[in-house]
Image (cartoon, rainbow, N blue to C red):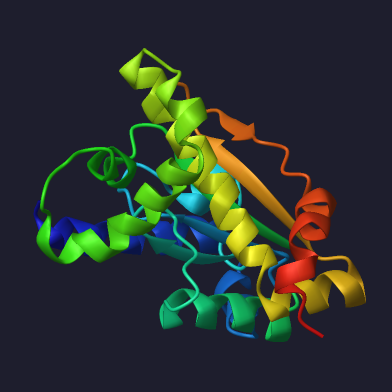
Length: 208
């Protein structure tokens, strides 16, 4: 890729934005108040704002390999706390996608070096749901189901956090689990039952 093209594209983007709204960048510089926190995969095919039809200032975004929410990942936890406690987002979305390389790698018995401890968290998802997953004979379907289950477990990990629990109690924050189908472009709502998951885990994970 010729990186000079990137800067030319940027110039064209600026012109297009100013043509639609002469105050676009001055307004953008006044701050942000997004309603959504989007936790997605780093995969180059998944563009958070574009696939939702949103633009700059609408979404606070965190991305990592396989859209993980890990309690000892200070990067992810800092994003969650900042978005929930300071930006006051109303919705937190974990969005996975089919054909996820991280999830596929976690299904394989291979030493992947520095990726091993990260992928172990996805293997833990497989362990929790192994009876369901092992009953699926079609490997592609099993892979897609693990993508979905991984999203659900990351939503549970969010619900375990103090920031999310307090924001739910104080202002009705909601957690959502979605999957992006790279084959069709469709966003699929897994319909996470936030209140049910919260009730199920509160005995152990409740934080005042």
